[in-house]
Amino acid sequence: MDTIAIGGTATWTWTGNLPHSVQSVGSPSFVSSGILTGSGTYAVTFPVAGTYRYNCVVHGAAMTGTLVVR
Ligand SMILES: [Cu+2]
Image (cartoon, rainbow, N blue to C red):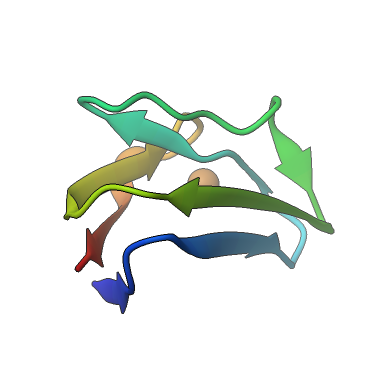
């Protein structure tokens, strides 16, 4: 679990040889543009406090995370 301040930006960074993506679980909805492999970043700014869950479309429940915005 990671915590950021309200109005902050979370950035996901791809490394390694496996394909991954980022997609929200529940609302508000956010999703990375497709499945990336090896390198790349995806950033989302969160203006509203809350607990945001996300996973990877490739790995599903095996690859999840929680972001707290406060
Ligand atoms: Cu993945």
